[in-house]
Image (cartoon, rainbow, N blue to C red; front, top):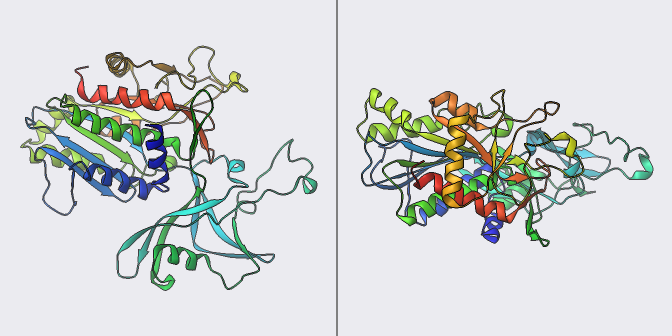
Length: 419
């Protein structure tokens, strides 16, 4: 599984690539692409819809009806980085640079001194779109220690002045948009818009006696991949019941989710309403379907850091390689409550998977996820879980291969067992 996961990460350098990769993998096992401007298909079998960098897939069993519920696994396809500005060409002191804007909350220093690619989508003058990935050609260089003797005491990164990558030197005629166009096989003058983000150019690796995984974008491609594999395994097992199985991987979680592609937008509700309606449910029937439904919000969790253990709670902390993490927060930054926690613990027990828990240190507030957003929009019981990571939001994060396997097993258990 671990090498397959690394293949998935390599094929998903941007949220747009990740959404398409999920759709392609499902189409290979018989899922049918649903276009939003066409009649909705809720016939038995698999269906998948891509909206920008988001993807939703649903499996309709033979006996599905308005008496069914939805079993939803939510995740997100985007990761922090640097997004190319609309007019990206920069020149500075003889270097050719690209103007970028910080996307989300990356650990800025981790992006320095790495060979970076650009990946995402471009819009063409004829209204068509292309996915594009350049070769590794960008670098944000650190200033030499001789010119900043205090760098190891307190590194200061000016978010505008210090983060613009270089891609060439003494070649003023070379334009970044020409490179992007060549990578996409189009003419630069035909590109009228773009959504492009930096990507660590190095492939992920599995290393060491504990089989650790070092790779970019594991927050949150770890959850996208695990939910995809769990859905495939649940279908192929033949154990799924009468509930409709749903995979929802949203974009823009790292910047708040409030977009047409994000969890705060209508995409998941659109799919559920149109599917329920196609099965014959009226408004009352849809509300009953929601009442029978549950959601697992799958997003990476914080492993305790051995060098910064005091940043964690003394008891409620996870460790790499000890199983998926149940995430709990008193201030509802996570959607977990006693009811949904019990559902998750039963899923893990049914799969024979160890489970850990995370609750924050009161002096170190946690982040949030799509879980509270989904629970609020739909009124569906939701639990927040994920594999533990170190170096979260670094250009290259750290996880355990064992946790990836267990997470997939637990998610499959959620999809197929009566919990």
